[in-house]
Length: 157
Image (tube, rainbow, N blue to C red; front, side, top):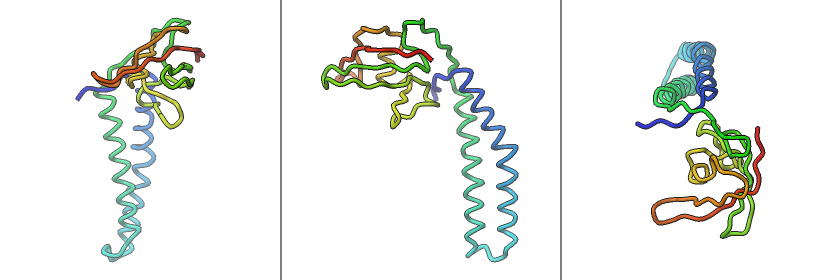
């Protein structure tokens, strides 16, 4: 498995979440399972199944985060003051559609495409990272499909 590119800050946030889930959530969820089990007949005990499900979801999230950390490639943002870097807002002009969109460039852990937060590993992220205002970039979707964009603005954060 090849891991995602993550910053030291991403790793620290994931480690903090793991600690919280192990130290705070896990004991609460184990207690909830015990309390629900003590109510008697498990075949019709909704609280028991809900408590077990919540406990299992917590454990699954811990495993997921741990796996992300183990396989991650640690990166640093080395972009210049005039280049698109991690955490920056970049306004992109889409030539084919004659529209501009503003995106925040993040690692995969912070990406949220519904809110215009795109990953540095996405096709647009790969194309614009390290570029400057006025640069024309080819966004390659696959070997047969690509389109061009132009960097209109960069807001450093």
